[in-house]
Length: 137
Image 1 (cartoon, helix red, strand yellow):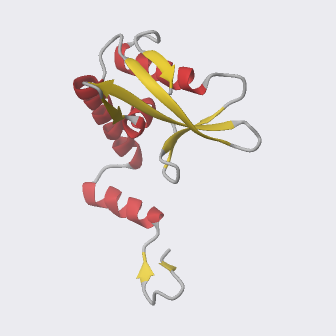
Image 2 (cartoon, rainbow, N blue to C red):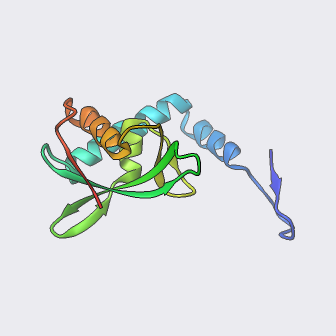
């Protein structure tokens, strides 16, 4: 359904309709697009960013008032330069990526959110939960 933004005098298409049009243009279903994004993210992470034994650095960006939701950002350091891998990691794992905060959203109590995400990432990339190290920044 189109939305009208006050004062703009223009109609725009909501995000839902844009997603639908992308799906219709490619001829793929949403599930197929999600699988394709996951496959591409895994290939990119393996080829360009991560090898077994590498360290993934996590930054805690936000905690909800209730303390149940954490937003984390993931980086790898190569040649002294940090590379942000948050979106690729979210796609590879299939975990929720929060567009507003540009972070991975983890809903859980009593666990280390970065440990959870990095071990899931290691499992999806290398088939071993301990293949990647994790450090907080």
